Image (tube, rainbow, N blue to C red):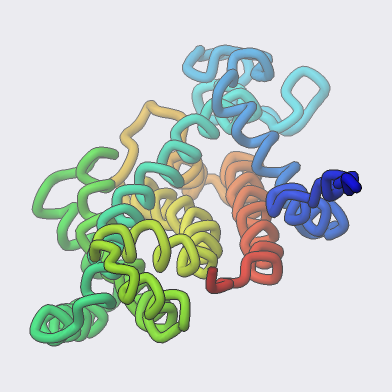
Length: 289
């Protein structure tokens, strides 16, 4: 007698399950909405900005917020709203390029050091001790001062210091995953070290790293704006939040909107990354497989 076999009902994918949990978290939705809006403005600032961010208007110098200029104007009559919106392009670029290279270098180094250990781990430990001895901002400013002001040199300086923190976090996660049963089974099956590290251990160790990356992008915007304020990051007349705050520092009592509006943009964007990071910290948990 032939037995009829019915296919098993399809199971929800891990991505679908993750999205289902994420969409039930208001903090994740708010943070994602803020970052999505920020990316949209960064990609098409001209679509939202009512004026040319570099256009002078000598008849509208330091005008307060109004219907024609919702964020007011600066000392050259330039529209602050337009300059803040165009600054999204530079600052979101800083959030990505100031962290992505440190992420790639740090994750690769941390994975190799965490897996092999030995003398490589000892050398890495001394390097970490040497870097974290000095304040992060002081090291970055020192490197930028040597290389010269500008966005590219700022990215180089941040990457040269920041990759150590990603590597340290990845190393700890890889060492924890290496002790799991699935890692031992992979070694017994004769898998190569590269396959074990990058196909088995690293995917299970990336959760905390991604959470840290979200938070680090918010810090990168704050750091890039700080360097722009000091004259070491983006250079005038470029529209960048730190540069805009610096332009209004001498008029804080008479034209407060010049510095306040870009400052609020920094706070709002940083809030978006922080909400996403906090939500991902709860949703992404390393699971051995």
